[in-house]
Image (cartoon, each protein chain N blue to C red):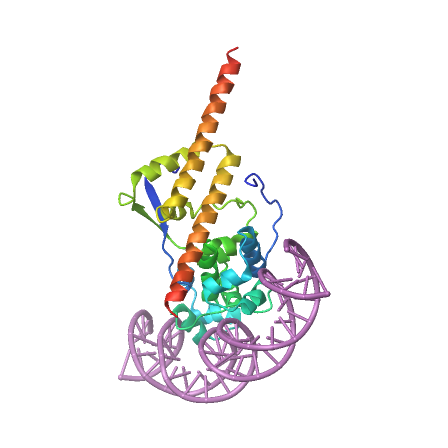
Length: 132
Length: 132
DNA sequence: AGCATATATGACTTATTAGTCAACTACAGC
DNA sequence: GCTGTAGTTGACTAATAAGTCATATATGCT
């Protein structure tokens, strides 16, 4: 699985676009959905067009009104992209992960998670400090 | 450690609980995460405890600060969700290995090498024992 | 053209999140 | 006990989402 040289990069469509796409795919009007939500059509339009930053519960209610799971709105399309640009030796090494036993694989990914989280946190902090 | 555990019961977990679970699993304090978010720790506490209904962008920022995909926070009530996060966002994370500091990168690969060596040794031994 | 429907947006009010500071509890280590 | 850290909660202000109504714009239909 890892040995296939492709990297899935998640492209997040903003939530409004995703809502609009879902709604139109179901041939529903803003008015209909807004009514089901007990929300004003005007506000619904603003959400679809990203003119406002809806609350999480609003997104949940919209998902419900559209009859989809929340993850379907949050989940974006995967774009597959060649990874020629990356250091292939890294991927070769990572391909070895597939040979590990489940327990060790899990431990390995825990460590990776931790390192990546740490790095992200550090980067964010550095950024925050710079903007002071 | 927990890779075989699967949840058989559909248990709805609100987003706050999910955030808290994710944060504590990564041994991060509210303060650390809140700082990375440029959010007040008090507000972060309120979100974790469901005392407030955060905006969608706030949830996105929290996911980012925690180093997880947004779907991992939202998708908590899935029945057969792998506990370890090496399913969807793994390629992204693996790409980030590249960006780790040299010290951590080499430590990371040392662990990988050790695990793979150990497995190979074990396989060889098992094979040797069988042929006795 | 005239009319209806769907959508977008402006203006205003109300409700609620977010920022900030402070106080309090709980708990661990010295 | 004292001290520091982590977390919760209250009180207040500022920022912004949501509710409401009006109106503009676009499109399709007869």
